[in-house]
Amino acid sequence: MSIDRTLICKNCGKEFAFTAREQEFFASKGFSNDPTKCKECRNAIKQRKIEQQTEIICKACGKKDTVGFKPNNPNDILCDECYQQKRQNMITSQPAAKEEATE
Ligand SMILES: [Zn+2]
Ligand SMILES: [Zn+2]
Image 1 (tube, rainbow, N blue to C red):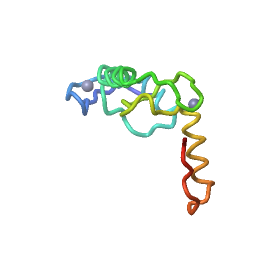
Image 2: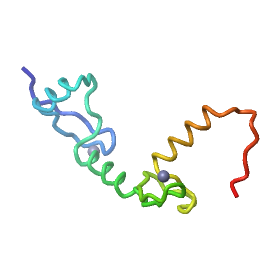
Image 3: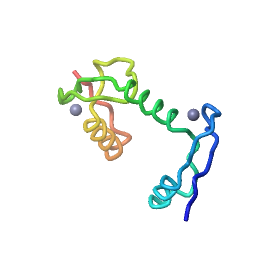
Image 4: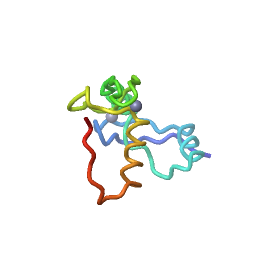
């Protein structure tokens, strides 16, 4: 049987409860490490990630997508799908081949 434990948040230094229920949840997921951040900090990080999402329009397929970072040029960006495809092409294409003009 697990018991509630008190841990210290590495982010804000506050004590937080790692409840028996959460410990069981962690164990069921196969996590062997204790959580390092309190719920508030974890939520704040999650929130920040959502706020960092930038809406883009893929220059290859025209699809609307969101990316988790601020692109330097939002008009010159690929959606995840096209980006993966491009990367795949780069891996499979001959490295010695001359780069074709895009125009
Ligand atoms: Zn915290
Ligand atoms: Zn695309």
